[in-house]
Length: 411
Image (cartoon, rainbow, N blue to C red):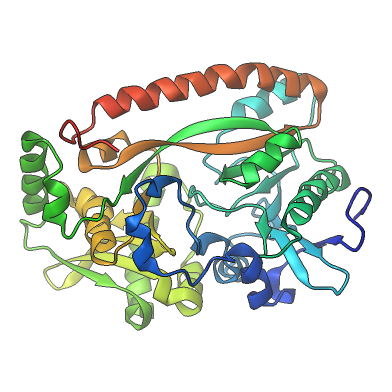
């Protein structure tokens, strides 16, 4: 890979697997703030803007699990091409979870219309470069930079490396999705275009209990959620929260059957295979919060969450029995219970879902950055995005007006 324009002493290379990259070196770039006391998280009034100091989805363990299970690589259309920035002493000082993509599936920032328009005009949209955690619509760092005086130079080296990688594979574009600061500022300075979308996140205001949280809701909304939680378990359903050593292979067998059944009915072929769940259980089981529903002696539904430094991330859900409100109980109410009990600042509940609003999740804007090589395509997208951002801002404002919180309890 060309090193033109890099600060003297820096080198950028591509790794097609993290097997050759020591976990400690990668994680020092991915989560340099790991180890920060969790107790401080809830003291932040603006916790929604506070980055998670220990994001699980850019960790070596999570990305290796995707590789080892075959969820990425091979013929999946996600070809790992991790960028690594090393200093003059061959120390890893920055990295990016970058992939060469042959389609736009599993990204949750939808560019299908861009691809179709470009291909109708005779262009070739794929391959493209995607910087993200596959199949994971969660915010987090994307330009992973270790602590040190080199941070700005290393971030610039990663951006230059992404453009060089795009040229090397003759790709149409580079997409950095669900990004945060300071990555977004650096990408926009480099000429990337900014795109917005909406998610729903729950914010901990230092609540001592779920009832403490309920007290911030309007009376009618509070009563509705209490009734909903009672009815969710009314068929003799019990809930268990598992982590670490409790995540046995039989538990994963059950959960994968829920995930595959529900995913197949709603979306077609699910992205994650059975082996993936064994891999994450072995590699990072202590960071998994698996909520299971049990009835008549068997597990019938489950929701998997991942714990970060100050955030609980809701990811996948599935069931083999349909019960009213059970989805809301396992995915949203139990997540809030856990976050309060473990003093986490927020819950990110994944993509889409205005139904989350009534359960105390607030609309927030997520950001992504896009670099399009073709000048005509870049001009068209640049003309489109400001209007889309205005629509997103208006939608967030309108959704906030539908908040279940009492007046005066909005952040």
